[in-house]
Length: 294
Image (cartoon, helix red, strand yellow):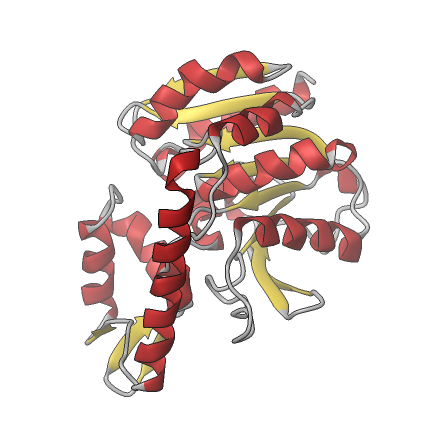
C-alpha cells in the first residue's frame, strides 16, 4: 500500500558539501520524469513532507544547506537566496535529472519559482504550498537593509568568538517540540516530525541542528520590479495550494502575482501555513490531478 512505503535516507555530494534528504522512491525510479522533488521552508526540513509521502509516490525531499541533516555552509559563506537556486542547479547536474515536477513550501516555493524561471527546461510543473512571489523590499531601503544585514552577521560571528550559544538547549525532545509549536501554527505531532530531524543530542539534552547564521538578516532583497520580472518568466504550469489561515503575504500575493503567470491555478484548503502537513491527503490529490492533467 502507498501509505506503507519505506522511507529511506539519501545524500547527494555537491561541490561545497552534502545535501541530505529522504525518499520513498526505490533507488532512482526507472522513469526519472516521475520524480517529485520537494523543497521545504525556512528553518523546516525534509520531514515536513513525511505526511505527504504517505500519499505520493517517487518523492524526494531534501534538507536545504544549514537545515536538517545537510552540511552547513563553510565559515566564509552565507545563506544568500540565490545560492539556494545554485544548489538546485548543482543537484540536477549531479543526478542528471530530466525535467521533473517540483513542490515547494514557503521559502522552498520562492527558490523553486526562481529556478523555474531561470531553468524552465528542468521543470515540468511547479506546485507552490502557501508560497507565491518573493519577499521584496523598496529601493529606498537598500542601504538600511545592507547595514542591518551585515551588522547581524558581525553580531553572530562575535557571539561565536565568545562561545555564546545562540541555539537553546532543551532538556528533552518534548520541550523542543513544545517550543516549536509555540512559534508556529503546527500541531504537536507535526512539530514532532520536524524536531526529531532538526535537533541533535548534546550533553545537557537536545539542541537545534540548523545553522545559527540562518537567522541573520538578508543584506539585499529583490525589488518588486525584479520579483515581477522573475514571475513573468515562469513558463511552466503552476499551481498554488494554500491554507485559509496561512501567511497573509500569500493572500495578498495571489492578487498581485497571479496575472503574471502563463499558466496558474490556486486552491484554498482548511489549514494554516503547513497545510500540506495538516491535509496531506487533500494536498496529494491536488498534486496528482495537476501533474496528470499536464
